[in-house]
Length: 372
Image 1 (spheres, rainbow, N blue to C red):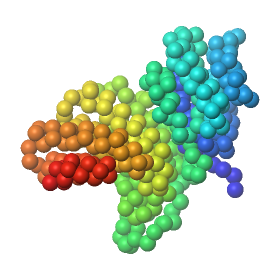
Image 2: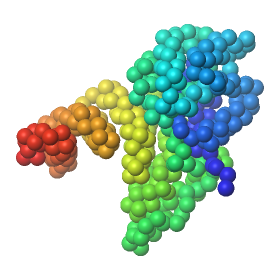
Image 3: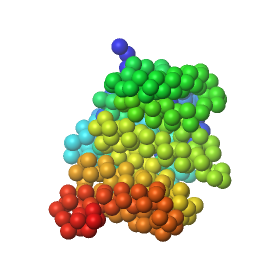
Image 4: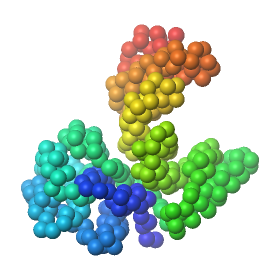
């Protein structure tokens, strides 16, 4: 059976079409089949705009930096988008050194890229290298337009509706509700694929996702989460400058859905990446909106998510830091709202999180204090 293209490539293509000037895309991958499908798909797409996707795929680590810089800055005519394929050999010291050198050079040359290259750059890097990429190229990371994570053991689908067979036995009422909501969403999704200008209800997608999760249909929920993330990114691009910032919060919610289902499936790197992107959005929202109850609670939830997946990964210091910050926000919410049931419950959860990670770290007195 032929592999099906990830919906991540669909949203990247739309982003390429709307990009004006320099735009950088990071693709963290260990999925060669998806990489080739994406390359073919994007190459065909840019041809429709009389462009050519220039591919840099050096045979040796020594050629990576030079070949990439030549492709970016020695273009004879109008700048064409560039695809840099350097994701292989993830544990090879020579390749890792070359990748770090390339990222550092690109980070230093961000201004030149914006003024002289003025096109899209797609960087394919090893799947587990997001953290070192952000550390090595912080300026480039801060202006990235999209970040994709493609894992070869988690194929995604774009051109068909979600499978409708339930994965687990649940109550008839819950199963029927999940099926109804899924079918309603599938009708909208198929229509949207035929005509992207179709008005699609993100609320319907959210309720379908929740029903699928409740009924144990995790893989179906994962696919739906990817579909809705495509739509959320599109709406974010269109409406991010509008007052109210609804598109910012919608995107953060659907990133959390991706993180949640990825964590349930044991795909912890993908979960952390989605949660981290959502946390970044919610920090920006908090900065823009101030200490509103919604902004504080959303930020607290994202910090708890990061704490949970960090704890799953054994990164206990990172988990403790996230939980501690979330606890501070919980105390601030309680001070703002008073002893409401929601504020009290949220604070209780945060204290339990701090207690649990303190216990994991062997800090038993701190754990006892938090639990008490």
